[in-house]
Length: 467
Image (tube, rainbow, N blue to C red; front, side, top):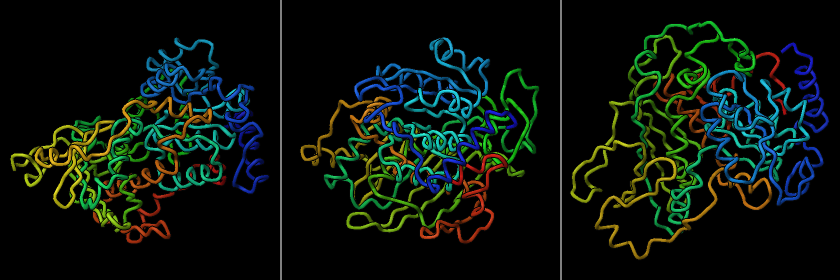
Protein backbone atom coordinates (compact mmCIF):
# COMPACT_ATOMS: atom_id res chain seq x y z
CA UNK A 1 0.00 0.00 0.00
CA UNK A 2 3.01 2.29 0.35
CA UNK A 3 4.38 1.68 -3.13
CA UNK A 4 4.39 4.83 -5.23
CA UNK A 5 2.66 3.18 -8.18
CA UNK A 6 -0.18 1.98 -5.96
CA UNK A 7 -0.56 5.46 -4.53
CA UNK A 8 -0.60 6.92 -8.02
CA UNK A 9 -3.29 4.41 -9.05
CA UNK A 10 -5.47 5.52 -6.19
CA UNK A 11 -4.85 9.21 -6.87
CA UNK A 12 -5.71 8.71 -10.54
CA UNK A 13 -8.79 6.68 -9.64
CA UNK A 14 -10.09 9.33 -7.22
CA UNK A 15 -9.34 12.14 -9.64
CA UNK A 16 -11.33 10.49 -12.41
CA UNK A 17 -14.17 9.74 -10.03
CA UNK A 18 -14.39 13.40 -9.08
CA UNK A 19 -14.30 14.59 -12.68
CA UNK A 20 -17.20 12.34 -13.67
CA UNK A 21 -19.31 12.98 -10.59
CA UNK A 22 -18.85 9.45 -9.28
CA UNK A 23 -20.86 7.92 -12.12
CA UNK A 24 -19.27 7.02 -15.42
CA UNK A 25 -15.54 6.87 -16.12
CA UNK A 26 -14.72 5.77 -19.64
CA UNK A 27 -11.86 6.58 -22.01
CA UNK A 28 -12.70 7.35 -25.60
CA UNK A 29 -11.80 3.85 -26.75
CA UNK A 30 -13.86 2.04 -24.14
CA UNK A 31 -15.83 -0.31 -26.37
CA UNK A 32 -14.08 -2.88 -28.54
CA UNK A 33 -17.10 -2.85 -30.82
CA UNK A 34 -16.23 0.75 -31.68
CA UNK A 35 -12.47 1.08 -31.18
CA UNK A 36 -10.37 -1.25 -29.08
CA UNK A 37 -7.40 -0.11 -27.04
CA UNK A 38 -5.02 -1.64 -29.57
CA UNK A 39 -6.89 -0.43 -32.63
CA UNK A 40 -8.32 -3.81 -33.61
CA UNK A 41 -11.57 -3.89 -35.55
CA UNK A 42 -14.56 -5.64 -33.94
CA UNK A 43 -13.59 -8.84 -35.78
CA UNK A 44 -10.13 -8.90 -34.15
CA UNK A 45 -9.14 -10.79 -31.03
CA UNK A 46 -9.86 -9.41 -27.58
CA UNK A 47 -6.82 -8.62 -25.43
CA UNK A 48 -7.52 -10.13 -22.01
CA UNK A 49 -5.82 -9.53 -18.66
CA UNK A 50 -6.29 -12.28 -16.08
CA UNK A 51 -6.47 -11.53 -12.35
CA UNK A 52 -6.18 -14.78 -10.37
CA UNK A 53 -4.49 -17.45 -12.50
CA UNK A 54 -4.43 -20.61 -10.36
CA UNK A 55 -6.98 -23.37 -9.81
CA UNK A 56 -10.30 -22.10 -11.18
CA UNK A 57 -8.48 -19.14 -12.70
CA UNK A 58 -6.28 -21.46 -14.72
CA UNK A 59 -9.33 -23.28 -16.05
CA UNK A 60 -11.00 -20.00 -16.95
CA UNK A 61 -7.94 -18.82 -18.84
CA UNK A 62 -7.77 -22.07 -20.79
CA UNK A 63 -11.44 -21.84 -21.77
CA UNK A 64 -11.11 -18.23 -22.88
CA UNK A 65 -7.99 -18.91 -24.93
CA UNK A 66 -9.30 -22.10 -26.52
CA UNK A 67 -12.30 -20.20 -27.88
CA UNK A 68 -9.99 -18.57 -30.41
CA UNK A 69 -11.40 -15.12 -29.72
CA UNK A 70 -8.71 -13.65 -27.45
CA UNK A 71 -5.08 -12.99 -26.68
CA UNK A 72 -3.87 -13.42 -23.10
CA UNK A 73 -1.77 -10.29 -22.56
CA UNK A 74 -1.36 -10.11 -18.76
CA UNK A 75 -1.29 -12.54 -15.83
CA UNK A 76 -1.79 -11.15 -12.33
CA UNK A 77 -1.67 -13.20 -9.14
CA UNK A 78 -0.47 -12.66 -5.58
CA UNK A 79 1.47 -15.96 -5.74
CA UNK A 80 3.39 -16.23 -8.99
CA UNK A 81 5.67 -18.93 -7.60
CA UNK A 82 2.91 -21.17 -6.28
CA UNK A 83 2.47 -24.58 -7.88
CA UNK A 84 -1.12 -23.74 -8.76
CA UNK A 85 -0.10 -20.78 -10.95
CA UNK A 86 2.67 -22.43 -12.96
CA UNK A 87 0.42 -23.89 -15.65
CA UNK A 88 -0.83 -20.51 -16.84
CA UNK A 89 2.61 -18.94 -16.61
CA UNK A 90 4.16 -21.67 -18.76
CA UNK A 91 1.37 -21.63 -21.32
CA UNK A 92 1.55 -17.86 -21.82
CA UNK A 93 5.22 -16.92 -21.36
CA UNK A 94 4.87 -13.66 -23.30
CA UNK A 95 2.06 -12.31 -21.10
CA UNK A 96 3.21 -9.57 -18.73
CA UNK A 97 3.23 -10.57 -15.07
CA UNK A 98 2.05 -8.73 -11.97
CA UNK A 99 1.16 -9.41 -8.34
CA UNK A 100 -1.01 -6.28 -7.95
CA UNK A 101 -3.84 -5.50 -10.38
CA UNK A 102 -3.45 -1.77 -9.69
CA UNK A 103 0.13 -1.86 -10.94
CA UNK A 104 -1.00 -3.86 -13.94
CA UNK A 105 -3.52 -1.21 -14.93
CA UNK A 106 -0.93 1.53 -14.32
CA UNK A 107 1.53 -0.21 -16.61
CA UNK A 108 -0.64 -1.37 -19.50
CA UNK A 109 -4.26 -0.26 -19.30
CA UNK A 110 -4.15 0.85 -22.94
CA UNK A 111 -3.18 -2.69 -24.01
CA UNK A 112 -6.17 -4.35 -22.33
CA UNK A 113 -9.68 -4.74 -23.75
CA UNK A 114 -11.19 -7.08 -21.18
CA UNK A 115 -10.43 -8.53 -17.75
CA UNK A 116 -11.28 -11.82 -16.08
CA UNK A 117 -11.35 -11.89 -12.27
CA UNK A 118 -10.86 -15.33 -10.67
CA UNK A 119 -9.78 -14.37 -7.16
CA UNK A 120 -11.30 -15.42 -3.81
CA UNK A 121 -14.80 -14.05 -3.25
CA UNK A 122 -13.76 -11.12 -1.05
CA UNK A 123 -11.39 -9.83 -3.74
CA UNK A 124 -13.83 -9.81 -6.67
CA UNK A 125 -15.20 -6.32 -6.15
CA UNK A 126 -12.23 -3.95 -6.21
CA UNK A 127 -10.57 -5.50 -9.27
CA UNK A 128 -13.88 -5.58 -11.14
CA UNK A 129 -14.73 -2.00 -10.29
CA UNK A 130 -11.25 -0.80 -11.22
CA UNK A 131 -11.49 -2.52 -14.60
CA UNK A 132 -14.93 -1.09 -15.33
CA UNK A 133 -13.80 2.37 -14.30
CA UNK A 134 -11.10 2.14 -16.96
CA UNK A 135 -13.67 1.07 -19.54
CA UNK A 136 -12.79 -2.62 -19.65
CA UNK A 137 -15.22 -5.44 -20.26
CA UNK A 138 -15.25 -7.79 -17.27
CA UNK A 139 -15.89 -11.46 -16.60
CA UNK A 140 -15.97 -12.07 -12.82
CA UNK A 141 -16.23 -15.43 -11.11
CA UNK A 142 -19.24 -16.38 -9.02
CA UNK A 143 -20.58 -15.21 -6.69
CA UNK A 144 -20.18 -11.78 -8.22
CA UNK A 145 -19.26 -10.18 -4.89
CA UNK A 146 -18.87 -10.97 -1.21
CA UNK A 147 -21.45 -8.45 0.03
CA UNK A 148 -24.83 -7.06 -0.95
CA UNK A 149 -23.53 -3.49 -1.25
CA UNK A 150 -20.64 -4.49 -3.50
CA UNK A 151 -23.06 -6.19 -5.88
CA UNK A 152 -25.27 -3.09 -5.95
CA UNK A 153 -22.32 -0.87 -6.88
CA UNK A 154 -21.31 -3.13 -9.77
CA UNK A 155 -24.91 -3.31 -10.97
CA UNK A 156 -25.11 0.48 -10.92
CA UNK A 157 -21.80 0.84 -12.75
CA UNK A 158 -22.92 -1.62 -15.42
CA UNK A 159 -26.26 0.17 -15.81
CA UNK A 160 -24.44 3.47 -16.32
CA UNK A 161 -22.17 1.89 -18.94
CA UNK A 162 -24.41 -0.38 -21.03
CA UNK A 163 -21.82 -0.85 -23.78
CA UNK A 164 -19.48 -2.64 -21.41
CA UNK A 165 -19.85 -6.41 -21.60
CA UNK A 166 -20.18 -7.94 -18.14
CA UNK A 167 -20.50 -11.61 -17.25
CA UNK A 168 -20.52 -13.64 -14.04
CA UNK A 169 -18.88 -17.05 -14.13
CA UNK A 170 -21.89 -19.32 -13.66
CA UNK A 171 -21.00 -21.25 -16.80
CA UNK A 172 -24.22 -23.26 -16.98
CA UNK A 173 -26.06 -20.04 -17.77
CA UNK A 174 -24.93 -20.55 -21.35
CA UNK A 175 -25.88 -24.22 -21.47
CA UNK A 176 -28.95 -26.33 -22.13
CA UNK A 177 -30.63 -25.44 -18.83
CA UNK A 178 -30.57 -21.75 -19.71
CA UNK A 179 -32.08 -22.14 -23.16
CA UNK A 180 -34.61 -24.76 -22.04
CA UNK A 181 -35.75 -22.80 -18.97
CA UNK A 182 -36.05 -19.65 -21.07
CA UNK A 183 -38.11 -21.40 -23.76
CA UNK A 184 -40.34 -23.24 -21.29
CA UNK A 185 -40.97 -20.05 -19.31
CA UNK A 186 -41.82 -18.06 -22.42
CA UNK A 187 -44.00 -20.99 -23.59
CA UNK A 188 -45.99 -20.99 -20.33
CA UNK A 189 -44.75 -24.43 -19.29
CA UNK A 190 -42.91 -23.08 -16.24
CA UNK A 191 -45.73 -21.31 -14.44
CA UNK A 192 -47.42 -21.31 -11.04
CA UNK A 193 -44.23 -22.52 -9.31
CA UNK A 194 -44.76 -22.12 -5.58
CA UNK A 195 -41.82 -24.10 -4.18
CA UNK A 196 -38.24 -24.80 -5.16
CA UNK A 197 -35.95 -27.25 -3.35
CA UNK A 198 -32.27 -26.67 -4.16
CA UNK A 199 -29.51 -28.85 -2.74
CA UNK A 200 -25.77 -29.55 -2.70
CA UNK A 201 -24.83 -32.31 -0.27
CA UNK A 202 -21.23 -33.15 -1.08
CA UNK A 203 -18.48 -32.78 1.56
CA UNK A 204 -16.95 -29.32 1.86
CA UNK A 205 -13.38 -28.36 2.78
CA UNK A 206 -14.26 -27.15 6.28
CA UNK A 207 -16.25 -30.21 7.29
CA UNK A 208 -14.62 -31.72 10.36
CA UNK A 209 -12.34 -28.89 11.46
CA UNK A 210 -14.58 -25.91 10.78
CA UNK A 211 -16.87 -26.33 13.77
CA UNK A 212 -14.02 -26.45 16.34
CA UNK A 213 -11.52 -23.81 15.14
CA UNK A 214 -11.43 -20.86 17.55
CA UNK A 215 -9.04 -18.47 15.82
CA UNK A 216 -7.37 -17.87 12.49
CA UNK A 217 -4.34 -20.15 12.12
CA UNK A 218 -0.90 -18.91 11.06
CA UNK A 219 1.73 -20.60 8.91
CA UNK A 220 5.14 -19.58 7.62
CA UNK A 221 4.51 -17.68 4.41
CA UNK A 222 6.39 -18.75 1.28
CA UNK A 223 8.57 -16.13 -0.35
CA UNK A 224 7.15 -13.75 -2.93
CA UNK A 225 3.50 -13.99 -1.87
CA UNK A 226 1.88 -10.56 -1.90
CA UNK A 227 -0.28 -11.12 1.19
CA UNK A 228 -1.16 -7.45 1.49
CA UNK A 229 -2.78 -7.70 -1.92
CA UNK A 230 -4.53 -10.98 -1.03
CA UNK A 231 -6.33 -9.22 1.84
CA UNK A 232 -7.56 -6.69 -0.73
CA UNK A 233 -10.33 -4.40 0.56
CA UNK A 234 -11.45 -6.69 3.41
CA UNK A 235 -11.64 -4.70 6.63
CA UNK A 236 -9.89 -7.38 8.66
CA UNK A 237 -6.29 -8.51 8.27
CA UNK A 238 -5.34 -12.06 9.20
CA UNK A 239 -1.95 -13.77 8.85
CA UNK A 240 -1.04 -16.08 6.02
CA UNK A 241 -2.31 -19.63 6.48
CA UNK A 242 -2.75 -22.71 4.36
CA UNK A 243 -6.31 -22.66 5.70
CA UNK A 244 -6.78 -19.52 3.60
CA UNK A 245 -4.49 -19.80 0.58
CA UNK A 246 -4.61 -21.15 -2.01
CA UNK A 247 -7.97 -22.95 -1.66
CA UNK A 248 -9.45 -22.95 1.85
CA UNK A 249 -10.65 -19.32 1.87
CA UNK A 250 -14.22 -20.33 0.97
CA UNK A 251 -14.64 -21.82 4.45
CA UNK A 252 -14.44 -18.49 6.30
CA UNK A 253 -17.19 -15.90 6.72
CA UNK A 254 -14.74 -13.02 6.18
CA UNK A 255 -13.44 -14.21 2.82
CA UNK A 256 -15.75 -16.77 1.22
CA UNK A 257 -19.43 -17.53 0.70
CA UNK A 258 -19.59 -21.15 1.83
CA UNK A 259 -21.39 -23.87 -0.05
CA UNK A 260 -24.36 -21.66 -0.89
CA UNK A 261 -22.31 -18.92 -2.55
CA UNK A 262 -20.22 -21.52 -4.36
CA UNK A 263 -22.94 -23.80 -5.73
CA UNK A 264 -26.06 -21.63 -5.61
CA UNK A 265 -25.08 -19.74 -8.79
CA UNK A 266 -24.89 -23.08 -10.64
CA UNK A 267 -28.22 -24.39 -9.31
CA UNK A 268 -30.63 -21.51 -8.74
CA UNK A 269 -29.57 -19.15 -11.53
CA UNK A 270 -32.24 -20.00 -14.11
CA UNK A 271 -35.04 -20.36 -11.55
CA UNK A 272 -34.21 -16.97 -10.06
CA UNK A 273 -34.02 -15.30 -13.45
CA UNK A 274 -36.96 -16.74 -15.35
CA UNK A 275 -39.30 -16.97 -12.38
CA UNK A 276 -38.43 -13.30 -11.77
CA UNK A 277 -37.93 -13.93 -8.07
CA UNK A 278 -36.07 -10.71 -7.29
CA UNK A 279 -35.17 -10.25 -3.62
CA UNK A 280 -36.77 -12.18 -0.74
CA UNK A 281 -38.76 -10.50 2.02
CA UNK A 282 -37.90 -13.16 4.61
CA UNK A 283 -34.95 -15.53 4.96
CA UNK A 284 -34.97 -18.15 7.72
CA UNK A 285 -32.33 -20.55 8.95
CA UNK A 286 -34.60 -23.55 9.44
CA UNK A 287 -31.71 -25.79 10.53
CA UNK A 288 -28.00 -25.35 11.28
CA UNK A 289 -25.62 -28.08 12.42
CA UNK A 290 -21.88 -28.06 12.99
CA UNK A 291 -21.97 -24.35 13.85
CA UNK A 292 -18.66 -22.68 14.66
CA UNK A 293 -19.09 -21.08 18.09
CA UNK A 294 -16.35 -18.54 17.41
CA UNK A 295 -18.25 -17.07 14.45
CA UNK A 296 -15.49 -17.83 11.96
CA UNK A 297 -16.44 -20.69 9.64
CA UNK A 298 -19.63 -21.77 7.86
CA UNK A 299 -21.83 -24.48 9.42
CA UNK A 300 -21.52 -28.06 8.21
CA UNK A 301 -25.23 -28.40 7.44
CA UNK A 302 -27.96 -25.84 6.85
CA UNK A 303 -31.49 -25.56 5.54
CA UNK A 304 -32.31 -21.98 4.57
CA UNK A 305 -35.79 -20.86 3.52
CA UNK A 306 -36.28 -17.86 1.22
CA UNK A 307 -39.74 -16.34 0.83
CA UNK A 308 -40.47 -14.34 -2.31
CA UNK A 309 -43.61 -12.31 -2.93
CA UNK A 310 -46.04 -12.71 -5.84
CA UNK A 311 -44.62 -11.05 -8.97
CA UNK A 312 -47.54 -11.18 -11.42
CA UNK A 313 -49.77 -13.59 -13.42
CA UNK A 314 -48.36 -17.12 -13.32
CA UNK A 315 -45.75 -16.01 -10.78
CA UNK A 316 -47.29 -16.65 -7.34
CA UNK A 317 -45.53 -16.26 -4.01
CA UNK A 318 -42.68 -18.75 -3.92
CA UNK A 319 -40.60 -20.45 -1.23
CA UNK A 320 -37.06 -21.59 -2.06
CA UNK A 321 -35.48 -24.06 0.35
CA UNK A 322 -31.70 -24.54 0.22
CA UNK A 323 -30.16 -27.72 1.64
CA UNK A 324 -26.44 -28.29 2.18
CA UNK A 325 -24.46 -30.78 4.28
CA UNK A 326 -23.86 -34.49 3.70
CA UNK A 327 -26.61 -35.53 6.12
CA UNK A 328 -29.19 -33.00 4.96
CA UNK A 329 -30.52 -34.57 1.76
CA UNK A 330 -34.04 -33.57 0.65
CA UNK A 331 -36.49 -35.81 -1.23
CA UNK A 332 -38.50 -35.57 -4.40
CA UNK A 333 -42.03 -35.92 -3.08
CA UNK A 334 -43.87 -39.08 -4.09
CA UNK A 335 -46.87 -37.09 -5.30
CA UNK A 336 -44.75 -36.02 -8.25
CA UNK A 337 -42.89 -39.25 -9.09
CA UNK A 338 -43.84 -41.97 -11.55
CA UNK A 339 -44.20 -44.71 -8.90
CA UNK A 340 -45.61 -42.46 -6.15
CA UNK A 341 -42.65 -42.97 -3.83
CA UNK A 342 -40.35 -40.35 -2.30
CA UNK A 343 -36.86 -40.31 -3.82
CA UNK A 344 -33.67 -39.00 -2.23
CA UNK A 345 -32.12 -36.17 -4.22
CA UNK A 346 -28.48 -37.23 -4.14
CA UNK A 347 -26.76 -35.22 -6.87
CA UNK A 348 -26.59 -31.40 -6.68
CA UNK A 349 -29.65 -29.83 -8.26
CA UNK A 350 -33.17 -28.54 -7.81
CA UNK A 351 -36.84 -29.45 -7.95
CA UNK A 352 -39.52 -26.94 -8.91
CA UNK A 353 -43.05 -27.69 -7.71
CA UNK A 354 -46.15 -26.41 -9.53
CA UNK A 355 -49.83 -27.11 -8.97
CA UNK A 356 -49.79 -30.68 -10.26
CA UNK A 357 -46.38 -31.01 -11.86
CA UNK A 358 -42.73 -30.93 -10.82
CA UNK A 359 -39.54 -30.29 -12.75
CA UNK A 360 -36.18 -31.70 -11.69
CA UNK A 361 -32.78 -30.50 -12.82
CA UNK A 362 -29.14 -30.83 -11.86
CA UNK A 363 -26.49 -28.13 -11.58
CA UNK A 364 -24.70 -26.04 -14.19
CA UNK A 365 -26.11 -26.70 -17.67
CA UNK A 366 -28.10 -29.84 -16.81
CA UNK A 367 -31.57 -29.54 -18.39
CA UNK A 368 -34.85 -30.06 -16.56
CA UNK A 369 -37.08 -33.09 -16.80
CA UNK A 370 -40.71 -33.55 -15.87
CA UNK A 371 -40.63 -35.93 -12.91
CA UNK A 372 -43.75 -37.92 -13.82
CA UNK A 373 -43.33 -39.97 -16.98
CA UNK A 374 -47.09 -39.97 -17.52
CA UNK A 375 -47.21 -36.17 -17.52
CA UNK A 376 -44.13 -35.94 -19.70
CA UNK A 377 -45.63 -38.24 -22.34
CA UNK A 378 -48.85 -36.21 -22.34
CA UNK A 379 -46.91 -32.94 -22.85
CA UNK A 380 -44.02 -34.15 -24.98
CA UNK A 381 -45.29 -32.97 -28.36
CA UNK A 382 -46.23 -29.50 -27.11
CA UNK A 383 -43.05 -28.71 -25.20
CA UNK A 384 -41.27 -25.68 -26.72
CA UNK A 385 -38.08 -26.40 -28.62
CA UNK A 386 -34.83 -24.66 -27.73
CA UNK A 387 -31.52 -24.26 -29.59
CA UNK A 388 -28.94 -26.97 -28.98
CA UNK A 389 -25.84 -25.30 -30.43
CA UNK A 390 -24.73 -22.04 -28.85
CA UNK A 391 -21.56 -20.27 -27.85
CA UNK A 392 -20.29 -21.41 -24.46
CA UNK A 393 -20.09 -18.97 -21.55
CA UNK A 394 -16.55 -17.78 -22.26
CA UNK A 395 -17.04 -17.39 -26.00
CA UNK A 396 -20.31 -15.59 -25.30
CA UNK A 397 -18.44 -13.04 -23.19
CA UNK A 398 -15.71 -12.49 -25.77
CA UNK A 399 -18.20 -12.20 -28.62
CA UNK A 400 -20.10 -9.65 -26.53
CA UNK A 401 -16.86 -7.68 -26.11
CA UNK A 402 -16.75 -7.54 -29.90
CA UNK A 403 -20.39 -6.50 -30.18
CA UNK A 404 -21.50 -9.77 -31.78
CA UNK A 405 -23.60 -11.21 -28.91
CA UNK A 406 -25.11 -10.12 -25.62
CA UNK A 407 -23.81 -11.71 -22.44
CA UNK A 408 -26.19 -14.18 -20.81
CA UNK A 409 -25.20 -13.52 -17.20
CA UNK A 410 -24.67 -9.74 -17.15
CA UNK A 411 -24.28 -7.96 -13.84
CA UNK A 412 -27.89 -6.73 -14.02
CA UNK A 413 -28.95 -10.38 -13.73
CA UNK A 414 -26.10 -11.98 -11.79
CA UNK A 415 -25.78 -9.08 -9.36
CA UNK A 416 -29.37 -9.50 -8.20
CA UNK A 417 -28.84 -13.25 -7.87
CA UNK A 418 -25.69 -12.62 -5.84
CA UNK A 419 -27.59 -10.30 -3.52
CA UNK A 420 -29.94 -13.18 -2.68
CA UNK A 421 -26.92 -15.29 -1.75
CA UNK A 422 -25.43 -12.56 0.44
CA UNK A 423 -28.61 -12.47 2.52
CA UNK A 424 -28.69 -16.26 2.63
CA UNK A 425 -25.17 -16.60 4.01
CA UNK A 426 -26.05 -14.08 6.73
CA UNK A 427 -28.93 -16.37 7.74
CA UNK A 428 -26.45 -19.25 7.84
CA UNK A 429 -24.21 -17.18 10.07
CA UNK A 430 -26.71 -15.62 12.47
CA UNK A 431 -29.49 -18.20 12.47
CA UNK A 432 -33.14 -17.36 13.06
CA UNK A 433 -35.27 -15.21 10.76
CA UNK A 434 -34.11 -12.17 8.80
CA UNK A 435 -36.68 -9.66 7.55
CA UNK A 436 -35.55 -7.83 4.43
CA UNK A 437 -37.10 -4.59 3.17
CA UNK A 438 -36.67 -4.38 -0.59
CA UNK A 439 -37.32 -0.63 -0.71
CA UNK A 440 -34.61 0.41 1.73
CA UNK A 441 -32.52 -2.71 1.00
CA UNK A 442 -32.04 -3.30 4.69
CA UNK A 443 -32.46 -6.15 7.14
CA UNK A 444 -34.91 -4.64 9.58
CA UNK A 445 -34.81 -7.03 12.55
CA UNK A 446 -31.11 -7.76 13.05
CA UNK A 447 -28.68 -4.84 13.28
CA UNK A 448 -25.56 -7.00 13.17
CA UNK A 449 -26.69 -8.80 10.02
CA UNK A 450 -27.78 -5.53 8.41
CA UNK A 451 -24.34 -4.02 9.04
CA UNK A 452 -22.76 -6.86 7.08
CA UNK A 453 -24.85 -6.17 3.99
CA UNK A 454 -22.45 -3.34 3.21
CA UNK A 455 -19.47 -3.20 5.60
CA UNK A 456 -16.88 -0.48 5.14
CA UNK A 457 -13.61 -1.43 3.43
CA UNK A 458 -10.27 -1.14 5.16
CA UNK A 459 -8.33 2.09 4.97
CA UNK A 460 -6.80 2.77 1.58
CA UNK A 461 -9.51 1.01 -0.44
CA UNK A 462 -12.38 3.43 0.05
CA UNK A 463 -12.16 4.85 -3.47
CA UNK A 464 -13.66 1.71 -4.99
CA UNK A 465 -16.79 2.26 -2.93
CA UNK A 466 -17.23 5.90 -3.97
CA UNK A 467 -17.37 5.54 -7.75
